[in-house]
Length: 275
Image (cartoon, rainbow, N blue to C red; front, top):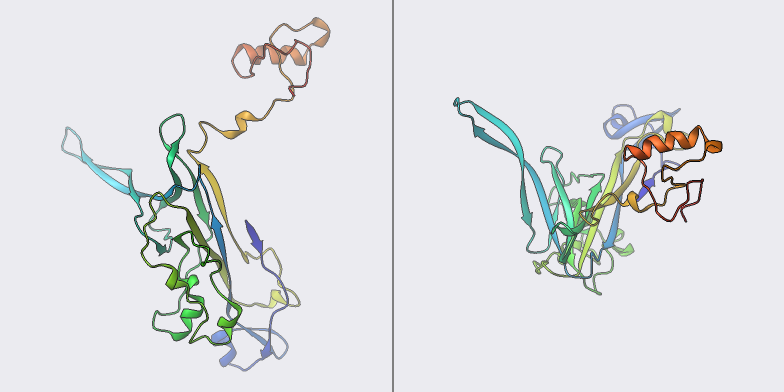
């Protein structure tokens, strides 16, 4: 999922010193203020069914001593299973892999089948005691995990902008410590960017300046190998190539002899579609 942000900025009259504290002068007599573009996606994943869990694989240093008494450092994984509903921020200084796993199905190697989340992080700078924060509490987390509930269908409502101090929906009420091991789980993924207006945003914000939000879900031990191996080849060869089909089939013959090109019993030596 990749959302590229563009449009016409909301402007105001430029006031020297004051406007510079909140943004930039972007045109003659015109300023525009700092703002953010933040999006939240509700992602209901069912990995091998609805019995799922969250595993977080943290990369941590591991030190060991050799026979000469020298201390060396390598890296290892600290794997943790989340027990209850939570919201969290992903910190690049604490590398980790966020994985939604099946608790019932494994791949051929005995590893739980799953999908990993890669998101563009967005960090909220509002303090916890700001009364308006309840109206957009979902922005506090890069990702939150809840047990599926039909009553929890959205992270915010239109009325929240009208009454910021008393929102119609406070997302934090979803995080009520329900167990999430072996359950039907929902991810609430937040991504976005802080937009500091600049003169190149006039008359319209370009799409090439990094103003984007999104996330990626990738198979993580879901398959037994690279899924591209299941894609059919355009042609195959068994090494028995007629002279009239050289030189390209000869190259295929050499490759096939080295194990680079698969050999298919049901495909003749001539070019054939592997359909």
